[in-house]
Length: 159
Image (tube, rainbow, N blue to C red; front, side, top):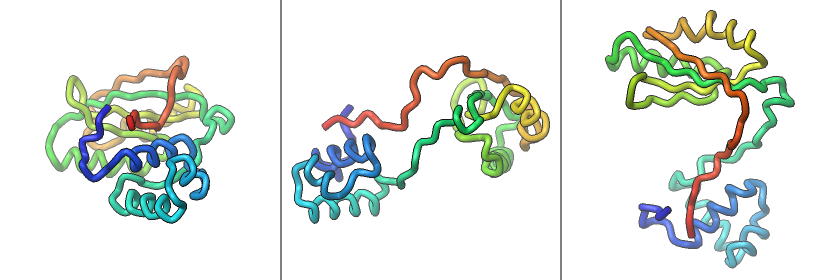
């Protein structure tokens, strides 16, 4: 995949790839991996952060070990597709930590949600108390994940 931005060179892409693999890599090790001085590597990381290519760092947690082993995707169809309904819906989903992703999509429904739950009983309770009460919801379709085959946040950057 070719990166469309002219603001990134091969070293920037190598830095981004290294940080995707290990967000806790020391600046000294990063500099070694990308063949730069530590000062130059740090300056590039700071620029990539300032320019919005690096959004932050976080730990990836094991949801199953933390009692949130059920992933449920939900298609949401709104009753109206007006700006105020979209805005109200977008604001409402921010409140629920169980909704880990929310994407407006083109096609036969309006939003695709990813939720994390303890089990199906917890999802059922959440659907009744929160999901179906979200502003503008006309219809939902639920897809419980039986097996997670791939889960990554890494972007396919090529050098």
